[in-house]
Length: 486
Image 1 (spheres, rainbow, N blue to C red):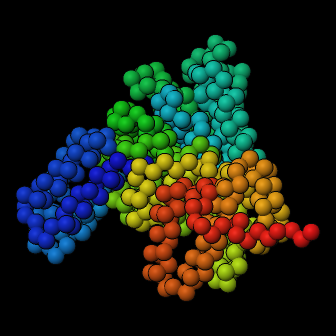
Image 2: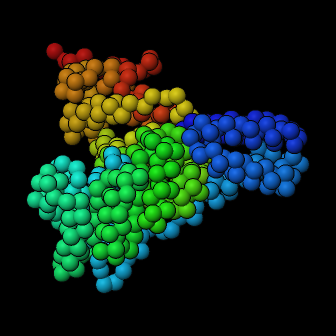
Image 3: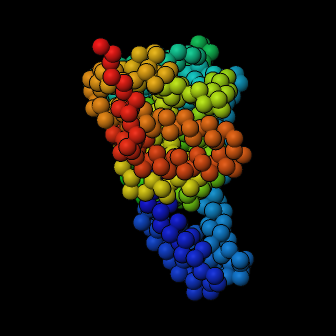
């Protein structure tokens, strides 16, 4: 996400930073590049015009031309204005007591609303709230059954209650009237109160904002269940069309939050930057993957940091905390300091990283690494081969790589469906990693940060993975092979 915009803005920064002194004309030239970058990112035209006018006014007012570091001063202004453009974003979703807190989900057809209902139910469950998901989309064939499957998948993860409420016999396939959805929503609300659910998610039919009958039905559902939150789901891939439809929904229903689905597939990000200014409704969540845990709260300041290549360390830490406990992190840190990291440890960390999301997306959260990933095709399938090779080793081999000989390497390669050179490459890279982590333990915080950036950038160039390629160095596992005694 934001990839094209990020690279263009970093070019602007480098051009300004490379000049000892700059003039008003240089600032105007840089701003023209910013304007082009925003338009290419599919940001709404009026938003681009206002944004650039505000940046120019502040840039000249702060005398960027007389700054010792004009590039830093200019980008600092752009960062502040981006935060103002996309924020502020309210923290989370407030809950009422006693429950249930009613969240009305609405959006265009095909916007990903049903899947987003499942993701939001998972989000609430992780925070300890019980959730009832009501199927009030009675227009689309099999919509009720689809939502039921989604909810069942979320509920299978354990934790607090996540249950489904639906009346399949009321759907359009049985010739029922449009207004029946209102009655279903009322019965779902009554059931949520009687069963003491904390949250009621009401999934409604996808509709065009120009369909007056369906929009009237949506308003009737809203009144019937006394919604506390009205969340509009829009498809990030549709760009400014999504933003315009969001404004129409907001004018009719007064939504208090927007969720951008399929945001991981939109490398431009223009919709995220336009939606708050155009609709007046804050962007609350973004969908960043297909899994039910791939729903992130939107934070304007963090997003601005990502856009400008500053990374998003806070989000990275939060993702890591969800996958690795403090006790596990302390244990691994102690082993790393002693140079005792094993392939078993590496495998557990590899799996934790993969649960955090696509590797390129995770590495992009590190400051300064995003630019190093430009144009690099990171095939997460390589990680499958790494995992297969480690899993094909026995316990002794994972603990002590010195026991590997030619026959063992051949067996591991056969068992993992890889080549012997790939196994050799994995071992070589892991030995290098052991050495680096031991050295990093003796560095200060800034030294460790620099080393991590270097390792991440180098690892990205090979997709982690020069581990899956044969070693080109003359020293290899073969040099440790000893002939068998006769």
